[in-house]
Image 1 (cartoon, rainbow, N blue to C red):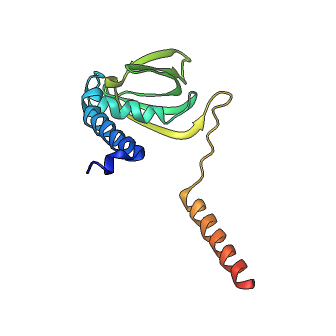
Image 2 (tube, rainbow, N blue to C red):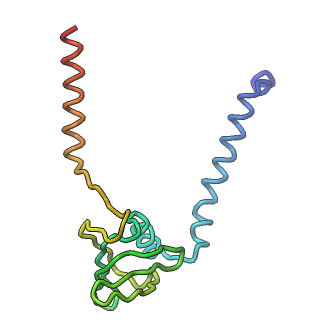
Image 3 (cartoon, helix red, strand yellow):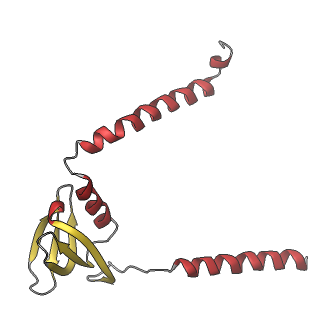
Length: 138
């Protein structure tokens, strides 16, 4: 056993595993301290996927709808520019019931190029077929 820990890479690996285990064990505690409940974190995470200026459809808990462009996203709230009135509003995540998108964006530099998964699969199959054909020709 003593000979095993005499190698520096084994000690480094062991310490790395210990630190990783402690960080993983503390992750739920750290996340709970953020002050957001499960639904709020879900809305926050979904909004982080969109770039600033993305055209979104917000469904509020008050049963009203709002269409517009996403502004800045922070830990407790986000800004949203209403498409009808061009008024900028700040919403907390607890105000939002659902977030939908029409895959449209507003503003310079906010273009989102959507590639369907089917297209990626077809491109992969064609590349694999070309590789097999090249190997057969040799």
